[in-house]
Amino acid sequence: MELLSPAGNVEKLYYAYTYGADAAYIGLKNFSLRVKADNFYEDEYKKVLELKEKFPGKKLHCALNISFHNYEIDRLLEEIDYFKQYPIDAFIVQDLGIVPILQKHFPNAALHLSTQASCMNREAVKMYKSLGFSRVVMGREASLKEIREVKDAVPDMEIECFVHGAMCIAYSGRCLMSAYLNGRSAQSGFCSHTCRWDYDVLMKDTDIGKALAQSGDMVLREHKRPDELFPVYEGDNFTAVLSSKDLCMIDQLAELKEAGVDSLKIEGRMKSVYYVAMITRAYRKALDALEGKISGTEALPFVDELYNVSHRAFTTAFYFNKTKADETVTGASDSPWELCAQTGEKITSEEEEKIFMRSQRLASERKTKLEAMVPQARAAYEESMKTHPDSNLPCAEKKEGWKMYSLTALNMMDENTELEFVSPGICSSPLKHEDYQLINPQTGEVYRWCCNGHPCVIYTKHDFEDGTLLRSKNTEFGHKTFGR
Image 1: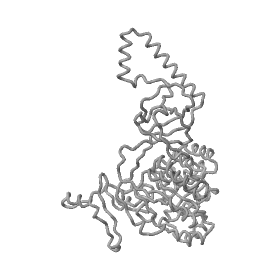
Image 2: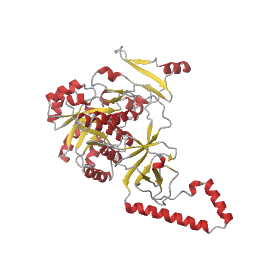
Image 3: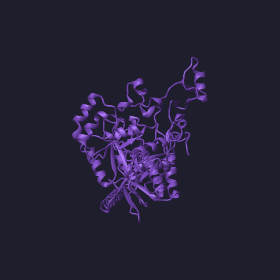
Image 4: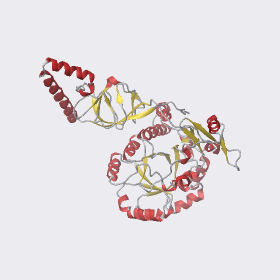
């Protein structure tokens, strides 16, 4: 089975491929249901082409899955020549109006039917096949039994299914709530997730209403469905109304394979680099175990890390039992870890030597300056350095067996930060303070602390794989977590 991961920008596309995705899906600005994701535009096709060359055999799917208005069709036609510069293997669409356009201008790209089309049965799949589609992303309401029936009826049609991520409370995600409340249509890519807004539950006596909402005893009940109760719960800094659980099928991959699923899709083009990397890696290892490439014991630590990534309570949704999909959730998502820094390429020996030369030159200049001072001035200077240590950082020195990598800090790091590094092949490993240094490559100084915006390399005794990430403990972590 193919593992298909989300990529909201070029950076996330790199991590999707690096952490094990067979394919990734992107959106093009203005034509995707995740317009708030960075999406792809301008000259980013050049970077995408480079990634496709770096990861031969990896596929690139492009979501053009909005419902098109006339002016959007016109704009699509105006920008066709630009889109042709992307190495797109398949388009994900729901609007049949653009099918002839894509077939004309992208004859070598496959057509994949978006889940937004709510394709649920074998006759619909046959019809889409006759129109030139080679894959159907099943409506999220389809059960595994129904998927198996579709595959048996149309065996040469590829079946793609969502297996992980946020779900919409509406039918196949076709929600009108956002458009109704603030004019941002989910069908045009502007969903504001109104089902998860911070609503107030009110009564004439506000205090009584608040207490009742926080009790967990309040529910919504639709008149014609008296047995279906949806909880309304107000907690610290949130109120949950019609908020669905997150989908997770990592423990049911064998059942998905038996049902004839060809591609497993992870939701999340608006999610973080850390999310894309960790969730992709977990499913990669679980798939490798299913296919006998590694043992289940080897895969388990990576799979368990999935539960340390921000998420709401998990569900198997409609796949086995419809009642699972009806369960809503209370509470916010949270994670015990947060992404602290991203490592880049290993620094070449030539560039590393230049950094140490800068360090030695700075140390020599400081020594010369200090020796030229009269005793009283030297004493005052040394006292000032003790009071303001950041103004006289130590100079880096070579260490036997250590390596240097480029580093992009995202959050504050200092000697008290509890760090771990994760990578495609390393589940997690502590990064002790004595085992690394953060160095300013422009001066050769060793930082006492580092944060976003600082030029930085990491000098360490560890070997880092491509795509290694540094994570730190989330000091604000404390919300309810959801495991198996």
